[in-house]
Image 1: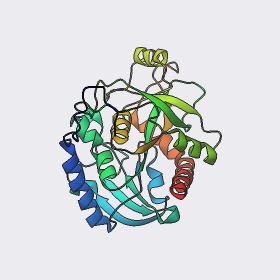
Image 2 (image 1 turned 90 degrees about the vertical axis):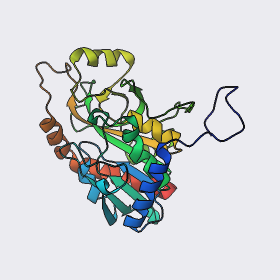
Image 3 (image 1 turned 45 degrees about the vertical axis):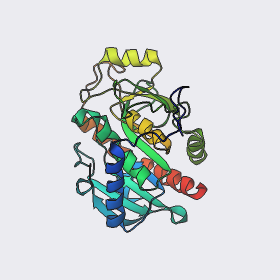
Image 4 (image 1 turned 120 degrees about the horizontal axis):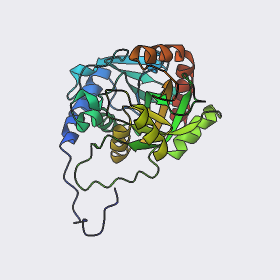
Length: 285
């Protein structure tokens, strides 16, 4: 149960969030379509991580996300509109979301959090959130995978409504980061800052984020991470550096085609890393 300030505990269960029934119905549809009553781990594939989808284990079912309640088709080039049900180590079931709903699509924070809430309703206890991002650190070149240790939500938005006081002090679970480090001891850790997008950040905004403590900038993940923690999921975050953030390199121009190219170049390493992490988490569940 989430901690609440004194005076707010009435001894009664809090009212069910309006999004919860929709997530439960989507999870039931997912179970029917996948043939699995429940899943154990969820994985959201961001920019640069798509190649991992078919390398994680035995694909048992493919479900078009647009056929599930509350879901929308993929809106970003290079993202897949499929949800995969995959058998991984130890017979665990993995839900792979080939895309996410981004805040800049205009559907609101609840729509951003809907896949996360559906994963929780489907029985998942762990979620891995991946993204492609810009690096503020010059030494983290495109192709570098970085563990998210903490985040800055600079969107001014959240999917939580009402007195839902979620402890975010260990939002990106230390135990899951330890598993990732056991797989690859050289994985760096950093702080990820989410801007609302869809425009890339300005050099001034990147300098501001650096002053606030950010190492990476992007347009996703933080709203999902908080919603996942509120739903009782343990969260692991992984960023793939696809470009240097604006202003880090002189005269650099930012383009989504370059983001996709950087992701393609890092596909093999990212797929190998992600599979090893998923298998290790599954074995330790």
